[in-house]
Length: 371
Image (tube, rainbow, N blue to C red):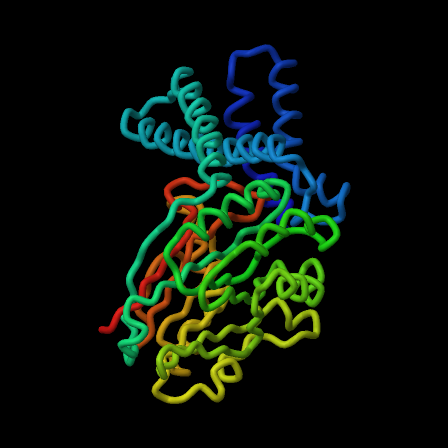
């Protein structure tokens, strides 16, 4: 189904954009075949590597292919909008009309330009985004406590060792107390990504680095990857919690697994188990890769849930579709009963559709305050 949907933009562009152009037929045919390769790059990757989630493509080539795929999708959307405008115009004027040739060139250049810019926005080392969150019952000792959230790094051919090292350096330069990584750290097997994830061992925070799995950890060997994270100095929280102490006051950091584990015979997320044993008067910060189950966390007394997974919807407009698949949660801050949910746009994103337009990546620094 995924590969069929990926081919639909190609069909729209060939039938409604290329064929009406005045260029020689052989040029249209060459362009159509080239765009077919772009449209089916995920299927080609599956044939060559066995997976659409970890194509070992060099970063420059990956950026070019993503820019072209993004331009193809955008051009299909623009063409359908142009067709709609022409239909409405014909209905008003009661005469048959064709779209101006200049309009076709404009939408083609616009789609290509946005594709190139969108990939650059997706592939960069993200800027810092500062937010403040009020935590009921926060002890004075934790007033101004700072957490850096990293999520959806998707370390891969598009986000290799050099990119990872730059993210670590930017994170370490921030004033912070703890680092929380909410899943999907990589795309690929441990053998293929060992060097690319190695810089994560350099992450430093006074109270430690905590990690939970996302769905992608389960695609490439859950336990080996979680053990690898532990060897890099991270404390894994799999339906469990840790207590941070300051001058007699406590703050709980809890984490759950991902629903992807259930289909593989592994434990799914269990908020109740994660917070079991936390004293009633201790605020709980929950790490949950997917935001869709936020209301369950609120019922368990969680004060703040940090999630990712959605990549912020990646593109303005498309984010509404992503929100529907995540119970309405896609980007930013939400009030869920008495709990605050924050959904990060992600530090990076899956290299199979690396495009950001209006939904920028972020390194999120969260400062805790009393209400």
